Amino acid sequence: MATILVTGGAGYIGSHTCIALLAADYEVIVLDNLSNSSPEALQRVQKIAGKSLQFIEGDIRDSRVLDQIFAEYAIDAVIHFAGLKAVGESQQIPLTYFDHNISGSINLVQAMQRAGVFRLVFSSSATVYGDAHPSPLNENMPTAMPNNNYGYTKLVVEQMLEKLAASDERWSFALLRYFNPVGAHPTGHIGEDPQGIPNNLMPYITQVAVGKREKLSIFGNDYDTPDGTGVRDYIHVVDLANAHVCALKNRLQQQGCRAWNIGTGRGISVLEIKNSFEQINGVTIAFEFAPRRAGDIATCFADNARAIAELGWQPQYQLEDMLKHSWNWQKQNPQGYR
Ligand code: NAD
Ligand code: WQD
Image (tube, rainbow, N blue to C red):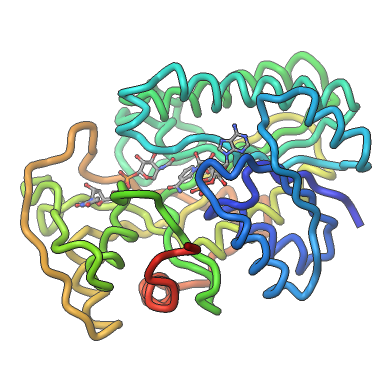
């Protein structure tokens, strides 16, 4: 079976993807600098999968480490999760984001070229559509400048990979545009473990539920949406992980650069998330309405028809599962991996 290098494999989406890869009999090599993750996640991945993987602690910006990995292992393809992802922080320290997300990706692709490895699945984001189009968003819509530096790094890397693929037909890139990943592994043993105050809705809700935060602030209740709160496309992280295995299989067969939306195609409001979380899990989430958060848009959800048609992928989990599994993880691990 093929051997896959997974950068950022100890992180939230990477760890779930490692389980999916091991279940599909791939050999897995993880490179992660643990700047936003714990080695415990990979211990648990191996326990859940009943199989082992190789872990190398290192940075994608370090060419020496990359060259060593490509020399030691016969890597067939790369899944590239490593990077920084906090939108607000990217406005404070843009150069750090350009360094990890853009220079890091260039460094990785250069090392791949030196090693003769030409297949890569890239973690992109729905943020590359900017706020130029009404939802559902489809891949034929032109990308637009995101309104934050994090999103900008995703757009730059996407465009760079497109140009690279156009210059040399050996390259094969999948650009997976994630919508809003939530949920956790059904066992509750791995999940999202943000450092400090969570930026994203779901970990904030679970931290209120577990008593770590006092109340949820709902950012804006005057949007042009059915209940006035923001609408997003929440996708279960295990469905997202499975999309990577499907994209990998596709890329092992085909050349070029292709983008796929990975979402459920269903828009859900912040209030619906809060209310359903309470109902399904039997807990109360204290909340207040707060002003809109800078940079947020009213509505964002996917047209996922291309991924379903071309990748043979189909989301399996419902909103209820996302909410149940997020809570199951948080309840079992009130301090995350610590
Ligand atoms: P995460 O922070 O949990 O995982 C990223 C991993 O990369 C972490 O384990 C971190 O330690 C590692 N890392 C960071 N910089 C590195 C470097 N220079 N060298 C080596 N390792 C490094 O984040 P995640 O939610 O799992 O996201 C994975 C990828 O998906 C990221 O590229 C992110 O931008 C993208 N993405 C995430 C979301 C989301 O909402 N979670 C949405 C769209 C896209
Ligand atoms: C969801 C909804 C908020 C927190 C971000 C990035 C995007 C991608 C996914 C990486 C919005 C509301 C949130 C809170 C709230 N990441 N909210 N109170 O903003 O859709 O997307 O994560 O690529 O690029 O921008 O996700 O979870 O932050 O917010 O009311 O405490 O919840 O306003 O409507 P978002 P989110």
